[in-house]
Image 1 (cartoon, rainbow, N blue to C red):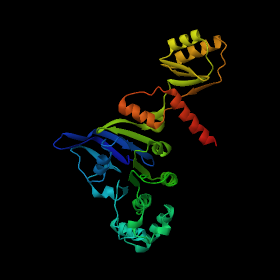
Image 2: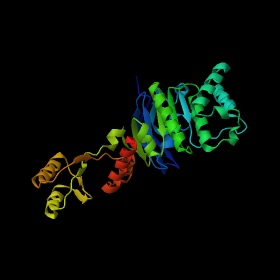
Image 3: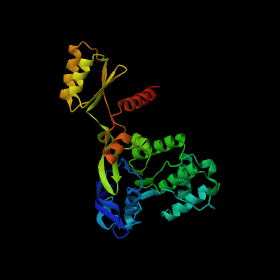
Image 4: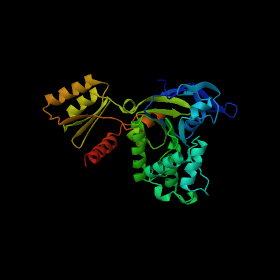
Length: 325
C-alpha cells in the first residue's frame, strides 16, 4: 500500500520569491497512523495542507495522497477536512449544516445523510443542539461540529487544522479519544496543532517545520529520547568526589539527594557509578531522562538544549505521579 501522504521537494514561495513558505519539503505519512505537523506560526503548516487539498499550487516538487497526484480531484474525495478558523452559515442549524455538507460530499441518499449526521452529532456531544442555529454556538461547539462534518462521508484520511482550538479540557480529552477510535478503525489522521502536549499523547509520528523547512520527522519516541541524561538517586556530600564526577560528565549537579548528569555515553556513566560504589554511596535509582515533545520541539527550533534538570525532572515526576493516582 502506498503512503497516504507523500511529498518530494515541495516548494512554495510568495511575493516573487521573497517569502519562502515551503522549501523542498519531503515527508511521508503511513496508513493507519495519527500524524502531527508541528511548527511555530508562519512555519508553512497551513500552506502545506492547502497544497495537499488543491487550494494552492506548489511552485515545484510533487505531492500525492493515496498514491494519486493532489492535482487529481479524485484524491480529495477520500479526505475529510477541518480548516483552522472555519466559519459556517449562521442561519443553518447543526443538523441542517451536516445535511448540506453531506450533499456537497456526494452523499445522494438523504436517509444515509441523516443517519450519519445523527451518529456523529451524538459522538461529538452535539445532538441536543442539532436544531440550534450555529450563530449561537460557542467556539468549542463549532469545533465539535466541524469535526463531525469532516467525518460525515466516512473518509479514509482526516486532516484537522488545530482541532482542539477553543475546546475546554474535557472536550479535548473527548476529541483525543475520538481520534484514537478513528485510528483503530484503520483511518489516517493528520493533525496540525500548536498544543504539543496533545500531540504527544496521541500521535504516532510527527514532523517539525520551521521557516518552510522540514527539520525533523520521526516517531514521538525517536524525537523525545535522550540517552545521555540521567538522574541518580544518591546523596553526594563529599566535595572531592563531586569534583571527580564533574571531570567525567559534561554536566553534574547534586541537589536534595539527587545527582543530575549529562554524559557522553554509557562508559562515563559506568565510571561515575563505580566511583560512587568505591565511596560506599548508596545508589537508590538510576533514571534516564526522556524529553517531552515540547523540549524536543524547542531544541530543534532554537538549536539549544535544556539543562535545567530540576524543572525537567520535577515536571516528569509530577506527570508520573498523576498517572499512578
